[in-house]
Image 1 (cartoon, rainbow, N blue to C red):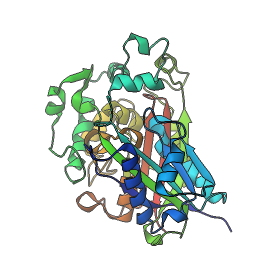
Image 2 (cartoon, one colour):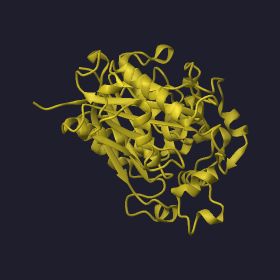
Image 3 (cartoon, rainbow, N blue to C red):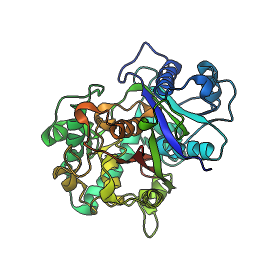
Length: 390
């Protein structure tokens, strides 16, 4: 008899500025909540995967397991994929459950990106996100790389910055309905364009937040949790990786480059495994480290044509009541971006929507959700299609 893996529980900490908790404290808080949400105890957990914070020891997952009181484990590891790991790790957990290696796998992360250390985009670039010999020494920062990406995008399609600003405005409209979001004041396109330039053409409101926080989910065999009706199914998972450094990414190949990313490969895999089409997606979480990140993914995944993301969003397609409400928690742009677990919040929001527990931002009758994650500017991607318990 085959085993089907599901997301059995999710949990997150308070988001924003959390000076009273250490990084380990954030991780323990989120993990405890996720395990309790599944109706399990730490003694039920026999697999643990950590998404590391910047500067973490490669063995930090062992310390996390000890701190949580998880003694005997048949899987214990740290993933090192940056922003793409949030969905890709679901595949690892799924394999472990369906192969019989584990009964319940805890995926957890936490980071004090705001109050824990001297954070900043230069620091993150130095930690290997880009070529340390030929790019970083010349002053490269993460916003600068995304600025290059955005500049190329706007030039290629003859657009201006207002096209990207539409995404920030739509995302903030969702955050207004989320009591856990950091930024809840409505904004306009004019507000985005009037905010300070961070790296041309990206304004401050085009950029994700800098936050403290922790997040976790438990992947288990179907029917394991205390309430199987709240379990969320892993319908289809895919991932894809291209050039890691900007020079190689800009060169690309015949079908992919800076503004035509390999997220389409991950998406095709996920849709094929899930057996659904784009029109079947009721709610989405599109990784939004910057507005440009969301724009190119919407286009590469086929939800709109090349250069049309701004018009797609302006027409209300991301809104509640639209064809595919997107980033309904407020995303990294307006809810929170706690580094190591930022994209996990998109998956937690998808689970919350599929359970019908999203309150004022609930998408009616949500049964199928798509979530993406991305890293290294536009190089690594995962796509997860999740389904309501059946």
